Image (cartoon, rainbow, N blue to C red; front, side, top):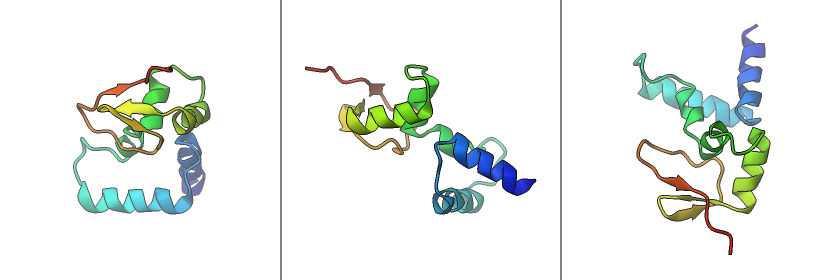
Length: 98
């Protein structure tokens, strides 16, 4: 049952590779033992997930593709990496297409 739930979480957060998922889990386990900082908050702070939660695109995969090809501005810098981690206070905007 645990394996199935882990696989569901991996696919829900954008088909993460096993190594990436495991390293994030181990990092979280070593650094954070507080109840307020949940393991899944790591995945929810990714640029593609935030873009998806705004509901500008229908799927997480279309968000990944949009960010990869068109980019989003994070604090005035154009980012093409969907796995960029955001922190509280970051400004995300869609660049003007010229």
